[in-house]
Length: 339
Image (tube, rainbow, N blue to C red):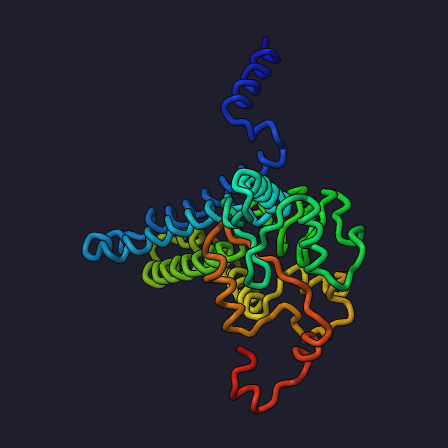
């Protein structure tokens, strides 16, 4: 009777919450729940013990309102980043197929060249929109981005069986190829790629600001009440140590990804540089995809502001690599070559 009742409850839960039947989705859900609970615990304990903060809220409500706004914005940014597609290659290929099919139908109906502006996803190749849409066109597009490799076999993912554009990589956790793959984030439960890297950076920035503010509030309470309730102080000291460790990690992560953005690199390319085919033989201080700091920042923050925009980058030529490996001179600095 107990076994049948348990099976019935599991079946009902699987129907109401389909992700409970998938171990990967279930673990991702528990991680998200744990992160939200950690935020609530750190903030809730502070308001539970700090009477001065409650009094300050009554006299200066704007202070607590701004803190609460940052708290809510951080959690919203977390879920938005986790729910944003990192830019799966299969989705881009399907979008091109659908757009090409619509263009062909329009061409047959009007007997005139069809526009390539149909569809919801825009594929930009070095600043130009690409209108080739079926599988063969996708293969030709990938080949045009990798002129050094003449065989499609070396470009095809052995898991997805799809030609990979440069900087794409297959993620074994998501079981999909990701455009401009950076890493797979366990806490977010998704990959970080071209589609959500910008949102990921803003989430780290907001989380760092929230951690700094919370640490300041914890420190202020301990300075004023260190001799009153020792058991409460122990709890807050333990939480403050955890906050300090998290803050160090977040600041290092923020600085690291800021460096990657300014040089137009990814974590995967930086860590696995010698193992990546298209980066072999390139000096470590040469950034093959960098277009200058200002241009890199614009492409990262502005050009990717639309979630439907994907930019496919071609591999640099030998002449371009030679120009980028040339050391800077005083004239280059004055002419802002690095920007």
